[in-house]
Structures are given as structure tokens and as C-alpha cells.
Image (cartoon, rainbow, N blue to C red; front, side):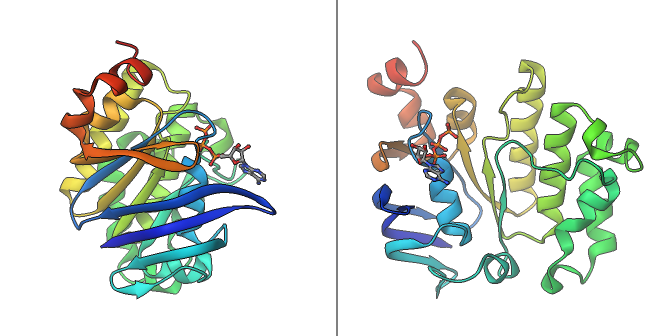
Length: 234
Ligand code: ATP
């Protein structure tokens, strides 16, 4: 579904990603783990069209999208939920969620999709008329994911959805990611909480200093001695 080949990208003259190649098949949960500053967010931004690739190719459903605009990429069903939520604080929860179907391609069937999304997030349903800025961190994260789902994603990219959440909410969050996948949306999950992410991923990549250092099944990486010491603290 998504094939990134030999991608190089960065900011100005600084190259962050070097020769990054990943692939994601339809229906998979694929995770990318890595330390702070390894380049995880930059990779998602490059796939989303927010950072222009220096070289390499990005193929989504057989179309080259490297260099396409973010709006065009979202319109194709490749949707990112950014790190640290980034909800609109002075808009209501309802308006935040509905912002997800801003692109013309996502408007058809939006009322029914809104209902489906609220089924996944009952807490969001309870707070629809509240200002998003007044929600807890976990609730804001739910709103950000709900907004992403309103964009009709075929591939949803989640940038550290568990960041700053209490352990019990982290568990819920990973359960929701599994549910989204079971409902038919392919998921690319970027995480620092490696244990949880690897548990739910069919396949996983490790990014170190802007390069893909390892690739394996989620279970394979969980059992790997380097991963155990460097990422799982075992
Ligand atoms: P974290 O887990 O801390 O979010 P990450 O793996 O997502 O880290 P990135 O956010 O992709 O890492 O950052 C990779 C490198 O790119 C870092 O060294 C960072 O300082 C740098 N960087 C990120 N954004 C910019 C920017 N807008 N301009 C210049 N450098 C940037």
C-alpha cells in the first residue's frame, strides 16, 4: 500500500533521513520505534508532504506522491495525526472532529462516519460541545485521532499517540489502535513506548540516527537482545 524507497529528507542543509526504505501492506499495523531525535516525526512529515524529500520515492497505492501537496496526499486517504495532539483549543470538540473532513474527498458520508467515530470514542461524544482546550491530555488525543478518522483514511499515521498519557490511558490508546485496524484502516504507528507498540504490530522498523537500523516482526523485535537493552530496559 505504501512503499518508501531510499528516502533522504531534512531541514535546510541538514539531512535527517538517510536512505530510508519501508513498506506497509494493506490491513497491517506497522510500527516505527526510535529514540528522541531519531527522525520518526520527520519521516511522517515527509510522507505527508510537509517536508520535501531530497531524493527517493514514496509510492501510495501505485502513485508517486513524493513532492505532492499535503492536501493532495490527505485527499488520497493518507492521513497523519500529529504529535502532541494539536487540537484547536478555542473550537468545540465537535468542530475539531469535523475539521477532519475538510477535504472534499472526505465529505461524502461524513454524518455516518461521525457516528462511527463517536462509537469508538464515547468520551468524545460526551464532550462534543466543550472547548477542546479544556479537555485532559488523553481526551485531546482521542479528539485528534477522531479528527484523523473523519478524513476517511485508508492509511492512518499516528505520531506518538501515547505521549504524556497516564499508564491506564496508554493501554486504552493501544487498544483503540488495534480496533481501528480491525475496522479496516491500515496503521503506521510511530512510538517511543516500544513494548506496547511492538506487541500490537505485525511488523516493525527501528530508526536510529535517521537510518533504518532493523526490520522484523513485532514479536521478533520484542525478543531481540539489542531491542531489549536499548528500547525495553530489560
Ligand atoms: P521525538 O521522539 O523526540 O519526537 P523524532 O524521532 O520524532 O523525535 P524528529 O522530530 O524527526 O525526531 O527530529 C529529528 C531531528 O530533526 C532532530 O535532531 C531535530 O532537532 C531535527 N528537526 C526537527 N524539526 C526540525 C526543523 N523544523 N528544523 C530543523 N531541524 C529540525
